[in-house]
Image (tube, rainbow, N blue to C red; front, top):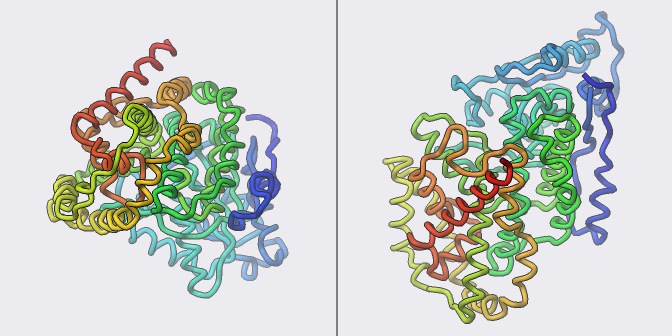
Length: 493
């Protein structure tokens, strides 16, 4: 283990540099601590955040602040020490600690209503909540604290990150599983996030590599967000949020290869990048800044695997492979519009009867009762209505495509470049390279139908609207992604 050299990130300074006009929402995260030995700061941070410190000592056990420690069953170690036990002992020296092990009966914990209800019950009345673990525990804790606040008292929330697998630690939303569909719902900001790079470096390598995959969405998703703004389906686009993202990814090539070898410095850079990404979604007020086609593909795979009681892969790993596919879709759109100026929308693609049959057919394989399909249709039909009302705006966008092409191109890293970065970090580049592996037929289903599950306009919606999302078009995108992946793997070897 290295010497404790953790640092406190200057969150306000970073946001101010990207947003001098103050277009972004306030950041509710008060402290971000990253570096070796950072778990040593947990009790100090809780003490600092509580309204008033209480005296220490066993004689004050009855009056000491109550801390609810939320964990799952996964054992997490740092140099052979159990991290959860270490943090509990550290907290117990100052506070009355109640530890709750959340368990939904599955091999991996899910953010489902029964678990959320349990967590909300145990944190009620606590002065502070400390969540230790992965993104799932973080999401559960944020919902639980939000519910406690709605009940009258909001406890302090400190989230201790133990793997660099997702960026959801530092935002104010949670991803929950309802009716077999993953949904992002408002929750609350953590007051502090503590990322010990010694702990993270010892996490299963698949988790940190998945985190690298998650990070790559910032190299494609902002283009979907901008496109949605241009066609009139999402008015939330903020250039300042994209500028803040640029501060995260500018030195990516300097440390990505170190993630493959679990080098603490590189793992720390990844943790910082993911943390700042989470902050961006919070201050932007939407996950759309970092969630486009690549996330939809991941959600589709999760839906299918969950419905069939099959192992669900790492979200970030799926996002990374999905990013290569998303970039390939953008590459195809750019090339086709350059070759066919004057292309107009195909209004037949907005027909509700045809679209409904497509949605029901796509999601029947997830849930034969069509409950999931109906949930998705509610979102997709709303998107069709919005696009239909804004067709003149879409037409104007296509007529002036040359004016926005370079801006959009600058928000999408080419598929070849993305694939090379993923391969360099040891992350999955293809859906078949995921663990568990996704076969070609399931992967194609997820890609072909990804736009049908959510009311969010992406490059796939644009291709569909232009009549360029038929079987041959989907095949072309997948072939482009496969060529990029093959070149990346050859370059690494």
